[in-house]
Amino acid sequence: MIRSLFSWFCLLLCLGPLSGSAPRLEIIKRPLPDSCSRARTPADNVTHLMVHFCSNAPEDPANPYQLDLITKVFASYGVGAHYLIDRQGTVYELINESRVAYHAGKGKLPHPPHYENQMNAHSIGVELMGIGTYEEMKVYFSETEYNKIAKANIGYTAAQYTALKSLIAQVRGRHPAIKLDRQHIVGHDEYAPGRKTDPGKLFNWQAIGL
Ligand SMILES: [Zn+2]
Image (tube, rainbow, N blue to C red; front, side):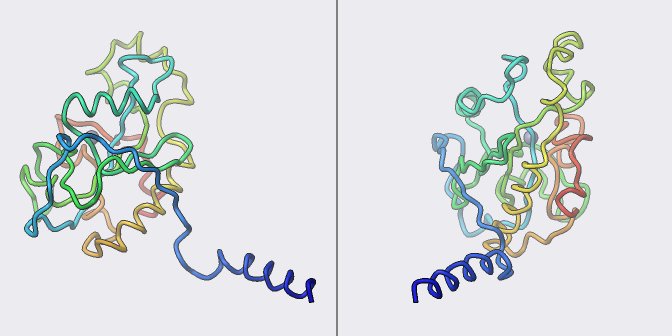
């Protein structure tokens, strides 16, 4: 009897991941102050998702991914995205989706709806801890400073792509208007070219199936 119960238990455990549901994604709440967002109104319908990079490399190039430092900078500027994914693929919720996060700023999508300067209202923002190419980062450092960053800290990690893919699936479950294509899932650099360079050339869209 015990043995057969045990077998059933194992079978259920083994079948769990095959049942077709999206993999469970643990999200750690790490709320930013309310000054980084505002309440969402019915007019602020979510149709897009925007990908960003963030780091504290300009402050500490040798140790560029300190969550405390990054969130402190967001808080001090009154900005922030809904989610942040660290280098290990851990997902943090910085701002609840029920609020409009200040992550996109001024810009215009290259395709309709252009959402000129309105992207915050219509998108979920996701920050990935990451650093772009020197060209993309030169507003923050000299080349000498940039070259002090360890190669492993440039670009993105496999764990981040896996987590982002799961997070997108989860967010789309709540906001089905976010179609799984490059018209609806965009980079900050596409919305604000010239002003923003994230997630940049090192971000591999194919790694999240786009
Ligand atoms: Zn950005």
